[in-house]
Image (cartoon, rainbow, N blue to C red):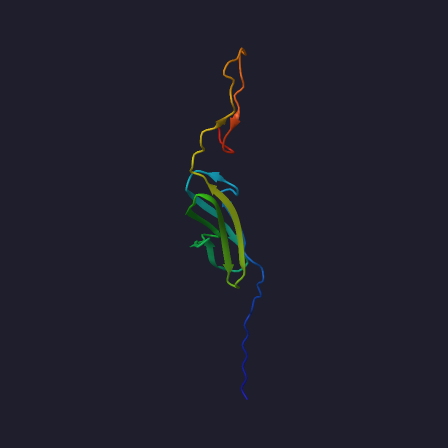
Length: 131
């Protein structure tokens, strides 16, 4: 009788993609709403899907760059990549948008009358505000 054979190669990939976010910097405090989120994805297998939160990204030679609008307050930006074997990899950063100016500083009481040639004015304001 006649016989034939065929073979296929199956690659086992259990390693998730490595996702790196280059910009913006983790922990950034900004008053600018729109930022470019950029970074890279590396993996031995082809990448099927890259997401920035709910926005699908396009990879160009393993890199991504996407304009993203922040919401007031803390924003978690998570980039997730899934390779052809279904392995997910991710990286996340936090960026805080603060567009509300601080209120006026609260000064400690000053003397009504003094004979001092100078006095120290002190008080409090929002953390990080310049007075």
